[in-house]
Each structure stands twice: as structure tokens, then as C-alpha cells.
Length: 164
Image (cartoon, rainbow, N blue to C red):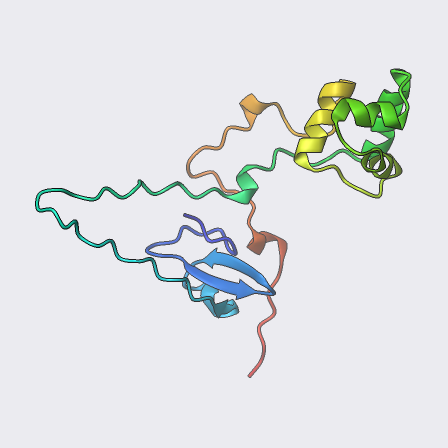
């Protein structure tokens, strides 16, 4: 597991700390930058009353990282791309909303540029209008390999140390 702040591999158990209101799984070195959050204790499984019979606990689910689901950045001018594709089909905003099974107000806000579409809405728009709204490389080039360095929150911010 990688530290969500500096990106280093965490040896042992990660610390859950709250930094600027966000709860992050960090290494021991980065734990000093936030306040440790107490995790609720898991109940201990009681042994079975019948000898020889074990109670099977479900296998632990793998943790999902939010950043693994991000496919790419939305293109600049996504609103004009949606509007142009809709108008090329000769549809009104209401027609597009009905085809997407969404509200007309959502389509209006997207076309005005007031709202960046969520993943599910973006996929619907791309499928119905036949356009691409993300600037990600093709899936075959985006294979993550073990040991490949990924961008972390620590790469994006700089921490100021307080002088004591």
C-alpha cells in the first residue's frame, strides 16, 4: 500500500490521519502532519458452540483507491462539444435529456459550462452523441505496472513546517 500523502510504500500498518478535513492513509513519517483518527474496533469472532465446527469469516475485500477509477481529464470546451454534437443531430436540450433519461436542467447546466458531468452522465453523453469528452490515452497504454510511480497528494502540495 502506498502513502496517500508522499507516495512511499507503507511498511506495516498505515496510520489514518485527518489533514485539512480529509482522512488519509499515510506512513509513519507523514502521520505527524495530521491528527490521528481512531478506527472503530472490529468485534472479535466468538468461537462456535459446537466442537469441530468453525465459523467462517468472509474473505477481506481488496481496498479500492479512488484515483484508480479516474480515467482522464475532461476536455476543455466540453460544453461546446456537447452542444455542437446535439445540434448536429437536430435535437433540443429536452430531446437529449429524454434520450439520456436525465433532467433537462442537467443538460442546460452542462452546455452552459456551469457543471462538469459526473462519470455516469459523461458516459451517457459520449454514447448517445458519439463524442469523447476525456483526453485519456487508449486503455492498452494505461496499464499500471508494479513499481511505477504514480502522482500522490504529496506531489501536488507543499507543506510548511512551523518554526517552534
